[in-house]
Length: 247
Image (cartoon, rainbow, N blue to C red; front, side, top):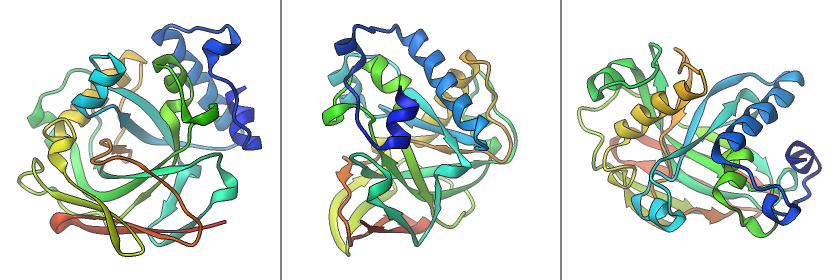
């Protein structure tokens, strides 16, 4: 149902409204099956995205851990590339940091191990698009829906700086800054998000492979996309990434 909703760009009711209340474990199994359908059409897994990396958001959702989703090569848009709103249901965008892994990570890892596995870091944009009506969902709903992952943009890869804890991050539409934040909003230190990604993926028998990327989580609120807009993210000394939005 969720796969068809995404392909047809037609939202569906929340699962609970259809009498399908899933446990979180069932939701992650549904997510895996959803991505198997996409793999059968030729898409390739290239990494993970992390969600609910904000403590305030977790408190709002009454959960005590992050959620995650899978990224495929078909979801990637080059920096400066374009996105057609007609390909989505009600897309939103948020600024992030992306990690490129040089060596694999799996299970419980230390901050030192996580740092050593990173080959590069880059500013990134994540496009979120819930397949549910009104962009409303329960925790199992969103997890089954691949944690609302829809598309992503990654800027130029750069060497990992000595400190990731307080990099300024901005989200702008047509040069007008809509959100200003800090990498500290991502769990206090984005490295913690990568550590959580390795732990949570291992629970699903996944290893974060060399060459994969991990989106660390939103640094500010997400904003609805508007046709004819140039969206950009800037992250301190790491540079920027851009996306052109059209109908």
